[in-house]
Image 1 (spheres, rainbow, N blue to C red):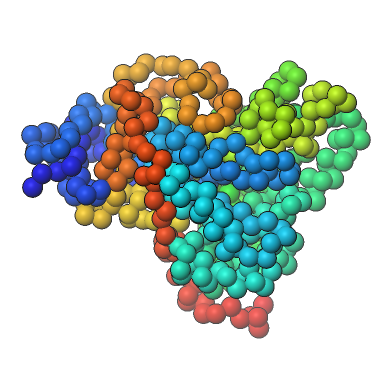
Image 2 (spheres, rainbow, N blue to C red; image 1 turned 135 degrees about the horizontal axis):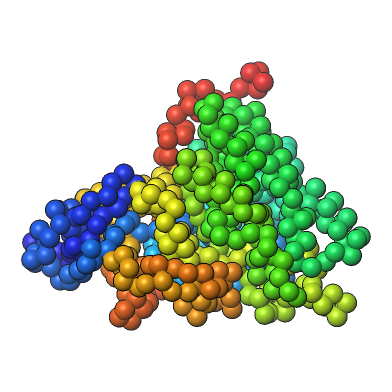
Length: 497
Ligand code: URP
Ligand code: ZN
Ligand code: ZN
């Protein structure tokens, strides 16, 4: 029978193996892997010659903010589902998991989900799922968790230990963990101590220190290590409910996570390119430029970067996500410049919207850095994300007869030479990239989603359609059998405390 697409002469990389293999695709699924060259004459509607380039499962970016209300109340983050997912596919990502944000004054999380579906439906170039962002863990919201997981296919949520509009108290965190546990929902935690942040911000402002670089001072590393330790303690109190620490940026937090993992606690962690490629010096630029790198946690220093790379290499971090949360730079209504006034010409760091763009640059930056083994690169940027969030083996793998034909084909090594990353190469709706001028060595040549070429860098660029992306109902997390220990313990028992 004829195939829809054959990719020949590629070197296939999965989380486990690197091998020269041809790939045949029919009806959106991978149907056959064969020794390299064997399928070059097969009957197929389309043949792609990878010319010796690497072929990998499409990127899975499990931490993305699109069209979300700013946590400081003015407007929304810059990219819509259309522009954000357009940017994703140009950077080799075929699946994203974005947030459905509940507002503090709303009692339902299902409403948040419905609203976010309306933004994404027929408006996404790649496949997508949602995490709910729980800002108001009232009885009603907690009682909806069962429907979230068993009907809606939403098996993860995020909570914050900081930001006035979102911060939960420890008792509220415990209630969320308990409800999440009984529904096998994975709880993602933004671990920074919001009270210490508020206190440091007051002190800095009292000393008339307002420039963007003081954002870094206000988010001192102990905010993160303390909150990480507390989150792990709260998880252990609720009978070892699995949690995932998002966007970990500094070594003391990473060490605490590693210690918990070593004694068998179900503690998972994520890091992001900003903690591998930016430092506090990037916040300390003339005028207001530093605002381009304001995110939370903030970029740290060079030694911290090394520790974060090590955490990827040694398995402390299961996933490497973008935390794409862009705000335009030169936009006084919804951008970084909302915090500039006549009185404060370099702005007030406390009002700079937190977050940076990175959905398109995640794979090219990390791939070009050549600091991870190829299999590790695929593991943290695709396979583990799919496992952690209940999408594997449909996503994140290339198993014949099982996996969607979601692939990224890189150029043969050296074909592009070294070239600088510039914002005009990118497809987001943002007026800058924090990585302007960084040297790259490769870029996704083709991105393929369910057997269809959606990004063809040499012929047409974005060739997919914004109505092609599908909502993904997710199963419970399967990474490292994370719910097994929970089941052995039986139901949470207050008398055991
Ligand atoms: O600065 C960041 N990371 N903004 C995005 C929101 C979040 O906390 O993930
Ligand atoms: Zn966060
Ligand atoms: Zn985020």
